[in-house]
Image 1 (cartoon, rainbow, N blue to C red):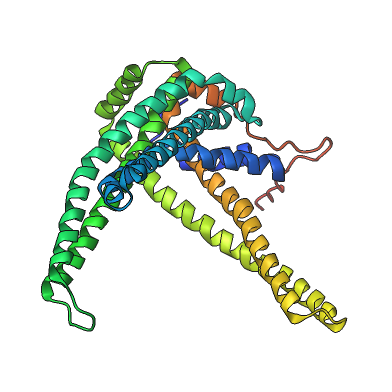
Image 2 (cartoon, rainbow, N blue to C red):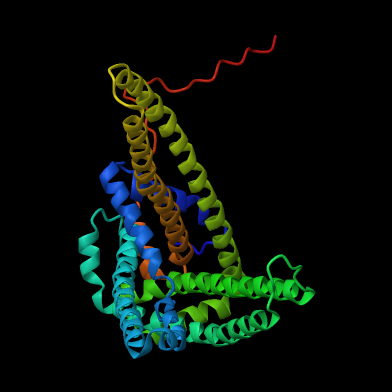
Length: 360
C-alpha cells in the first residue's frame, strides 16, 4: 500500500469502521465488538492507585493499632493483585481488538487465543512504566499534601472567622498542584496510547521483542518526525471530536427513550391509578423504570458509541502504518473488499450524442 500522510487515512478509516462494526449490523455482534474495544483501552495505562492506602499506615497505626495496619496492607495488596489480573485481561483484549479490526474478525475468542505471550510481555512493560511514573508523581505529591495539612493545622481557623490571606493562597496553590498532576497523568495516558498504536502491531504480527518494536518506532520518528507529530496531533483532535459526538448521540437517544417510554408509562400509570393503585407504588415503579432505562441506554448506546470511536481510531492507525509496515499493509489490503463498480443491466442502450446539424 502507498504511504499516506497523517490526514489521508481519515476517509478509509470511516469505511473500515463501517465494515468492521456495521456490515452487517447485528445488535448483539456489533455491541460485543464495541465492548471489546472499550475494555481494550483500559490497558493503555497502569497506575497502582490501589497502593495509595499505604500512605495511611501511620494514621491506621495511631487509630487502630497493629491490627488496623495489617488489614489495611492486606486489602491494598489484594486490590493490587486484582487490578493486575484485570490489566492483563484487558491487555490481551487489546491484541484481540487489533486483530479484529485488521482482519475484519467477527469473533473475539480466536483472536484472544493467539496473543498470550505478546500480551504478557506488554503488560509487564506497562506495569514497570506505570509504577515508575507514579513514583515520580507520588513522592512530591505526598510531601506537598503533608505540608498543606501542617499549614491548615497551624492556622486554627475559628468558625465564622474570616480566613487569612495565606489560607486563600494555600487553597489556590492546592488547586494548581492538582491541576498539574491531572495534566501530567493525561499526557502520560496519551503517550501510552501512542506507544500501543506503534508497538502492538510489531508484537502481534511478528512476535518481536520489545526492543525490536521500539527500534522500529524510533526509526519511524527519526525518518518522518513531522508526519509522526501530525499523526499524534490529529489523533488527539479526532478522539476529542469523536467522544463529543458519542456523548451527544447518547443524550439524544436517552431523551428519545425518556419521551417514548415515559409517555407510554404515563398512560399506563393513569390506567393503574384509575383502578386504585396507590400513588406511592406508581412513583416507586416510575423511579425503577427510569433507572433501568438510563442503565440500559448507557450500557448499550454509550458503549456502542465509544466502541465506534475507538474502532475508527484503530482503523486510522492501521491505514497510517500500512504503507510504512509492508506486512500490515498486505493484511489490511487482503481483508478489504474491492470497491463496488456499477454495471448497467443487460440491454441498457448506450448514450448517443445528438446529431450536429449541418451548416447551410
